[in-house]
Amino acid sequence: MPRSTRRRPALAHPATEEIDLYDILHALSDPTRMTIVRVLRTEPERACGTFPVDVAPSTLSHHFKVLRESGVITQREEANRRFSALRTVDLERRFPGLLDTVLAALARNEAAEVV
Image (cartoon, rainbow, N blue to C red; front, top):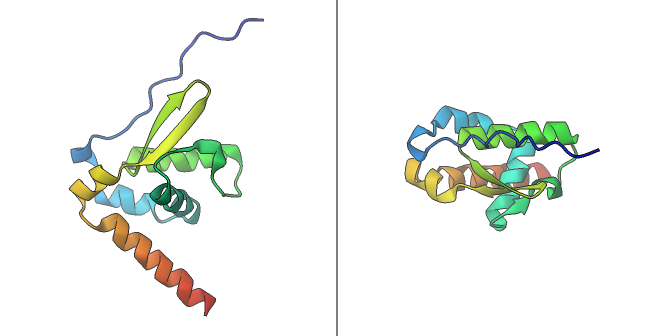
């Protein structure tokens, strides 16, 4: 039986000027999404199914959608894989220092929990 020739709808990414602070803060408020962001901070791009998170694929897709629609990440499709990357330049242009501040605060919080 032949595979469907229907294409998936294009991925929605807000324009830089449409990125909203509240949407970003909401997206960064989840531990799974913060893991994704931290990984992407050290790697320029990564395939979606390769992140070190312990959630169902459908849940992971939801997390990527929240990050993408808030403007934190961009995604592209290549064959049957989807790749994600941080929108570092756009975020820095829109809210200078925000991502660094949030990641530094998270690292301090995690270090305090270990002690």
